[in-house]
Amino acid sequence: MTRDSIRILFFSFCIVTVLSCNEKKQKTDKIKLLESVIENTLNEKLNLPKNLEVYTPFSNYLVDECNIFNSEYQIYSRVDASCGTCIRDIDTWNELIPEFNKYKVPIILICSSDDNFELIKYFCETGRIKDFRYPLFLDKNNYSQTFCIGQIF
Image 1 (cartoon, rainbow, N blue to C red):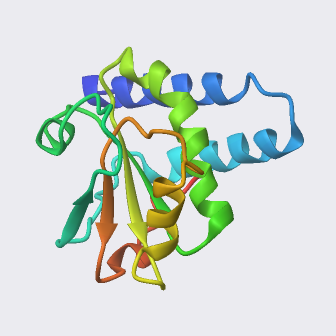
Image 2 (image 1 turned 30 degrees about the vertical axis):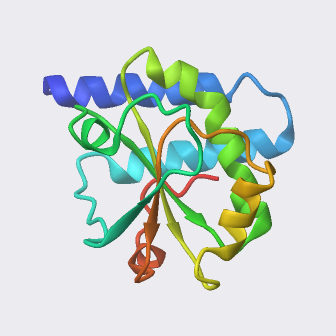
């Protein structure tokens, strides 16, 4: 087993440990999905959209987008920015940030939208989303609808 594989397994274990602290059935289902995603995506290549727009509606960022992509590891997740329930999952990611910061692993949320990102912008402007600590990445061409690696929440 290579050093990178061991690190990926370690971070995977950390993710499962953090998520397993909550006893709700919904969280248990998410953990099972997370485990499945991790098992199916280890050593897989992730093709990201080529044209991502950086959206920075908040002011308390931990790092900028250049440092995010230069990190040794990143966690990617797709967010349907035209779905109110899906957008609210950003708050769940926000709760996980302190744990991942210990290992300098940024969370990269790639947003796709059917409404030109109007709903997510409204949620950010009205405070319905807590200050997310990383920039959001908007996929203007909705390419990310075809990528599902890391689509956990």
